[in-house]
Amino acid sequence: MPLAGLPGDLWPSDHHLQPVSPLVRTRGVATAVSRPGHGNARRHADDRQYDSQGASLRCWRKRGAAAQAIGRSRGGRTTKIHAVVDGAGRPVAFEITPGQLGDVRAAVALLAPLPPGRLCAADTAYDSNGLRQFLTERGTRPVIPNNPTRKHRHPFDPVAYRQRNRIERMFCRLKDFRRIATRYDKLAVNFAAAVALAAIIIWWA
Image 1 (tube, rainbow, N blue to C red):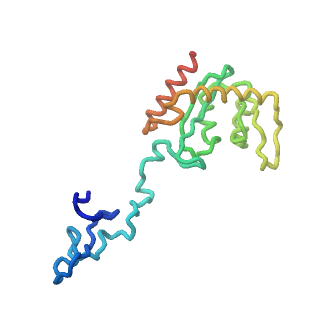
Image 2 (cartoon, one colour):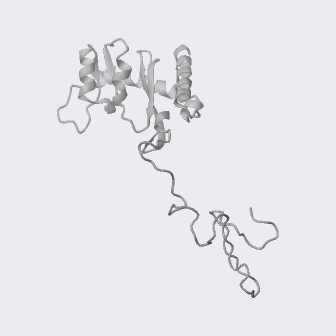
């Protein structure tokens, strides 16, 4: 902090002492003040070229965000919750991933341990040949809209697709818990535990 009683502020943004112009003519005494630990006042504080330069972001210098299911999407730093609900709209399985991860990548891992259902309704983000084949082999009818970029379109039942609103209602109830809607927890394991507790409440409420 600058010393009280001295005119002006002697500390710049990088907290290095700067040369102070004398108020009266001097004989070359204290024409410049050297920074602590450096003999030359004009020498840079360290080897970095810019004050805002950070540590290396190479593959061996991870900062832990990806390990805690925090990713960067178009909306900023986010976390996704992938979930499966039953016919009553109750959550039966979920997984958290970084925000930039595609939805379809978590679908098979969530559905594989569960018993196959009569149909599976999902939005356009889950339109992939691999997921459709996985559901068909299990005896489940996929009810997924065709992606506009798809060349070979699959049959789609818009009436059965209305049942997808059950998972939307579940997410609305899940977001009633402020701890989950804003992700207060830094660690992924703590956030997943909070989602599990909220899912139990939704199941019995």
